[in-house]
Length: 346
Image (cartoon, rainbow, N blue to C red; front, side, top):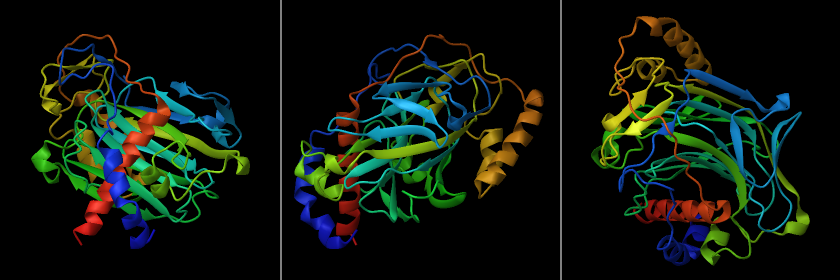
């Protein structure tokens, strides 16, 4: 995407961001909330070609299992098929192997998001078919818009690629087909105050950024207005491989700081030092998804000798949800300005 295109909708995008906020059913920064349901084992793989969605809830539209994987299709205006993990992870490594949808203005995405609006994103806009975007937010903070990057990817609508996030208390890595394409250090995110660090769900879906009902800025960002008569537009997710660095049945916020050190785990199955976990240290040294998987086996075999460090907490769960189209519009409107501000500062 060229500079001219960015500046054409800069003013409109800024206006859209003014009202852009993601939502949560209970924000632990504001009040006492139920504990989050955790993934109580170290590793979980979902093969969506197997005929089942496994431990994933469909939160919007219809998502089916096919020979190519989970099928997400936009057939008409208003469609935004989305699935969400029925559990949270607390630092971890996630590989999503997917083939993006085609069509002007169609956005294929997967994100991590917490109850207090920490967020880590991957998104691919079909209009710009050689680019994929990364972004992050801490506590829903939109006071600056310089957090996004763009990565080159080949034929994402024809080829399955693996989009990964390796997330620890010290740094976040975004990986494309096993190669690190971006690293964010804890201290680089406003000395950690804007660093995503609380238990997160995994959300995967597609939506029409080019929908004619969206703001002009959003439509411009998505590359133009979506023509639904050219559809349907389909994304496939072949598999999701998850390593949870702090397996537990539940995660509880013990105060309103939103700091990772305030999170307590119930019935933890692997004990760790959350400031520098054994699993995090091993995975951090890897540079590919393959080596990350090898590291997980090493950590799994040694976890029995680790000392317990998680404290008991309440075990009920809270569910974060929002109307998918408005949710994605808000998130990506924020992302627009991240890129704009970075260009302006060049």
